[in-house]
Length: 132
Image (cartoon, rainbow, N blue to C red; front, side):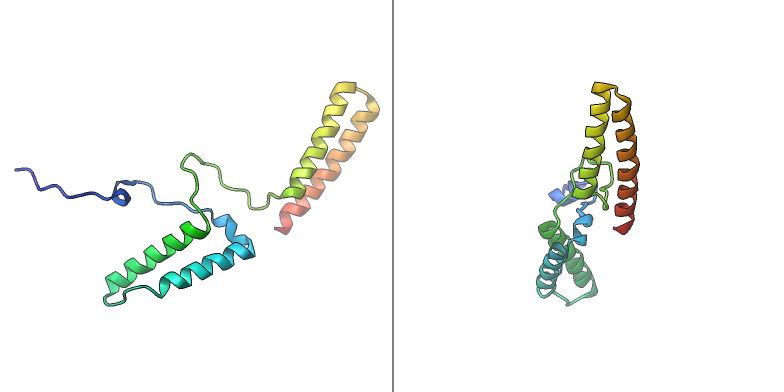
């Protein structure tokens, strides 16, 4: 005998749990938006039984995170670098420019310049990465 089939919702079909861009919470405006959305959602929870209260809490947290943070892409396996910012990006670009100049000219002065810039920028990147 075949058991009766039940309608399966899209949420039940989804095998992987939703993942959110939690690194965005470091930005004060995004953190404030998340708190605001969560407090709005929590006021609408039905607390008649512990089960409905729990389900309401989980649903509220997911909705607030989805609205304020957004979901991670499914194909993204690498973790986000929380310490990456524009100053580190500029530092790397500066090293690349010095390296490319040395490669094109093969001059000993350009190599010395590249080595000096590389040491200075690596130290700066290390310090900036530790500050985060």
